Length: 90
Image (tube, rainbow, N blue to C red; front, side, top):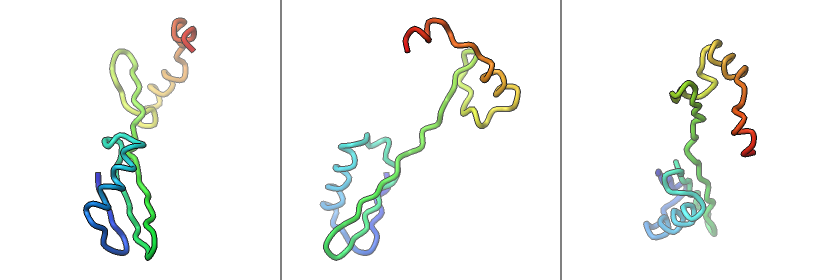
């Protein structure tokens, strides 16, 4: 996790307080960057989360995101019939 301070200094203690605030909402492993923009009387807090890839499992193998598949694999996924047991769970 990167902490980026903009427009002025912030003590380590203040930065840690903002990090604790963000990690109380999201796991620390999910936070990519925290932006702390210092103004005269307040601090704006923004953060970005890691983009989780959508992995698909087809034929017993994890094969990545559907957007990166070739045309044949995309057609196979489109034509796939859901398992009867998976429909009952929903």
